[in-house]
Image (spheres, helix red, strand yellow):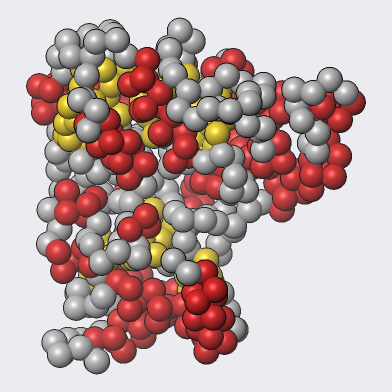
Length: 410
């Protein structure tokens, strides 16, 4: 990619796009809004309490270490784990890579990794990379709502199995897995098999107690809880051995080389604290908005399909709807012109003309997957926002379909 050429194209695109009178941001899957209090915590860290290097023995270093320590206390309390069981990375993607590849590098004999067919690409890709190094990777099928086939999972567990990695909440269709049942199946088969949870979309959205879960590893991301980008964390149960996957000068931790992003971690902890403080209010608010968005779109826009489960089995923030006879990319552009920001298909493949592997795994047809739109409600959204979004989708779908060779209703 030539950034100079791309910059000219994007500048022209933004100029032609204009500034909408109203904006509703529903793309928290990719990147999102940040609590003002988290930004304030970051600013304090950048200008004072976190500007130093936490492993250097002078006042600014000690201040940075204190900020890191206090932030870790907040996260450990929310995760129900020990402070020494948290390793910091700079994103949830890095945490997933460290969990999977780091465990594989430490493995002495076991060479089998089991994941579900709908895992995030930051789980799928490191697993497939290990397949090139002699590991066997097995993908467990799911049903049409995205729930793991427990019998298939149990049937794949054997003495060669090193790891089972399954997200408690699917990032794309919001299916809430029975994590306790999954862990029990694995551990009843063989206590030496490790369980990793990609918990980024579950943390602070549904109850999650790492101490009681029985999981060995779990990944987290700051931006998923309305903190800043640039901070992630990996829970590593005491006694679990991992090998570093990047190398360089160490700071206060042994598994991730380089200086910790103290301001981002401070913002991360502040966001988590707010989500915990409003644990009853925020998820309930997001779920109400989610249901209104789903009902409003599916009842007013023809030829729409909800992807994933409904009600309590779905994450409180997740909305994924396929618009038949509409290209998802065309819908994102049309909605953007109206000030509504959503993503098409899988967030990590939105610039590639391939259908979401998650939607194909739940037996959606190619054309249904290509017309999918992913949205996430947040504590920041209002009912007025959602009503505006519903109205805009009706207009956008009608306009796109009117230009299609397949004439359909709105």
